[in-house]
Image (cartoon, rainbow, N blue to C red; front, side):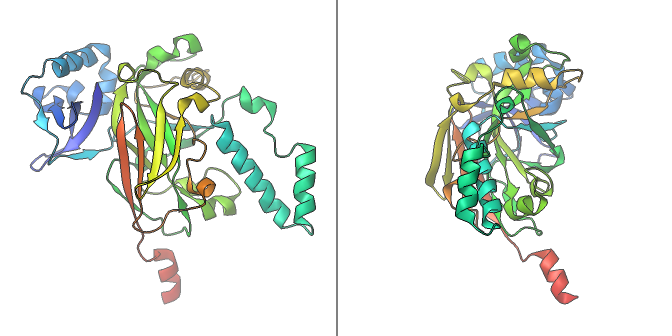
Length: 330
């Protein structure tokens, strides 16, 4: 089952739906008027397995009830996730940024070449051993979520903007102190996740997370949430990024150092998790412009694709920087 949130002309509010084939959608909200469980994706997740099974049966037996997807506007499949946790599970990406940070520090020294040689010798370019066993995450602002085909407004405080290719699982069942062996039972499905980042702000802050990842539209998700039965193997799932139609990287979830089950279990230690929470994988190796050597520009179209999920496409729009404009007028 592939869950979506969508709008059509005449709708007073977004509807919950399920994709049918390649170009159809079953309007679950219209099929269940007045039922809270089908009023939104979050309500649907909170309603639990009985409601999910009803929807799954209706999708399987939809007959002519499905409508053409043409004319509908897909929104973020989950408009209001309770919480976003973004994890660092991709060692290749982490090592790239470790070296990049060392190069930045070396550039400030009297002898950059010697400084980098010293970093090579003293282990500064290697991740600490606990990076491979202890999960790390930051929490993102769920109010900054946007969806497929949405335009991303360039944050006015930033000079450089980047994308980050990720996957995210969505919790369907909450819980606390969840064993990793049982954690998959708490996962409803998986979606694509674009963690837009203001790189110059990130460097200025000296932190991987902060204002650099906190602006309207910073997190694009979609186009759907695919239940795990739609994905043949969660850890052999191929993902691809394209910039203006040109492939930038193709990777697989085999790259994940820790599995989503490990992340769910770790986060649940003495902490109650709730349906709808997002757990993002971290950036795949080669999955951002800093790694490929091409940051985003005004008008760029960035696409992520994964089998069983579809394509998450966003266009970058840069207006005159309001902060700089205000300073000039002053």
